[in-house]
Image (cartoon, rainbow, N blue to C red; front, side, top):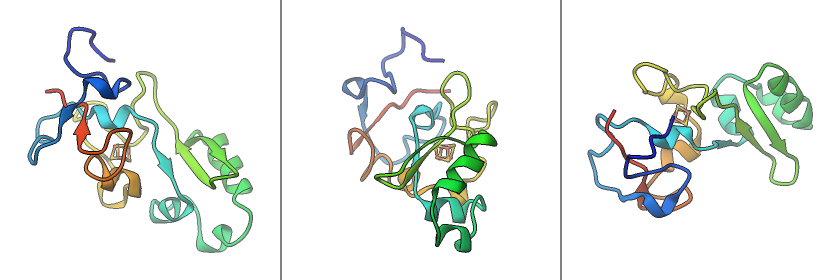
Length: 130
Ligand code: SF4
């Protein structure tokens, strides 16, 4: 949970720090408390949907994954899914103790591009020590 005394708040990009290489080492992973938008290709890579399913309507995939509490919502217009978050806003794939991604090699594209290319404030991140 966010500590009001810390200097960055993931929910307030105005408090974020300019990103520098190596900043992720020892970080609390505040970026993994932000809602993650995933495409159907991200879901296929994560093993959550098949290519055959993806070739048809995405709504049945969304219905199944919402029921399984893996995604929290699906936007039919953008065709994007939002990964579920645990209490405290952590991504369901963030390890509670190590604060490391448990699906790192298969993580969604938005996670790969953060914070340099993608995110609410490209080039900045909510870095904070563990
Ligand atoms: S999928 Fe991994 S990198 Fe992406 S927000 Fe979740 S824990 Fe973080």
